Length: 322
Image (cartoon, rainbow, N blue to C red; front, side, top):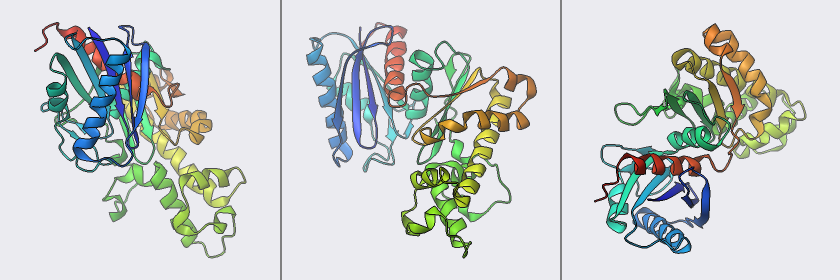
């Protein structure tokens, strides 16, 4: 059996041939360069074919392909919703891959599912059967591994963590992305900084030298290093919410580990001890003492290793390839 893992992001697709141990044999990357719809699928196919050629794999060799996508993978149909890729509102990715590579098994999973499987296979959560990956970037999502199985839910939307209700009362600001994400995602951190500045006419800190609409989470973290009061307030709130959200996960699922990743962790990695201290206030006391918080050890590779893991698991289920 040949194992292929593919990690599709907003700007590129990475792929690798994997050994059965989920170690990478050959790896390649291609840029999306503005492609949309079926052109993105063609790029994925081309990358697969390149990997097979580099590995001297014959066309009639049995293959198991796992692919990580930035959105929702519908397990019943194999279709995907990827909001950053135009034309992928309900794209039949699994069927397209099966048509192109007929002697294959294909499984498509969301990025948050692949992140936790990658960490449990080759990362900081290696060997864990109960672990959660909280991905904090533009948005916030979580991959949840319990008793060795990833949770999917009724319609494969498990882990939409940005919608956690953490700060009442409800406001219409939460309509688009939820409460948690409004404060503690990369986008949310920038929005909260802009709001606070607009409500503080006497503010003259580091962020005052930047046009309001150009303030991003990067500028907020940079201002924190100079003790900017807006940055301090915004990130104190984010730390509190990361801790509260983690506490909820710990109390509900009793994991061995909570792993933080995504672009914000990153610069927020220095807060991991403070996040754990905040979680201790809220979480079930026995569970939190048994749980370790850590930053991803695979900052750019968790998705690809997760794709490899699902290819290997799927390939081992049966040798019957249609």
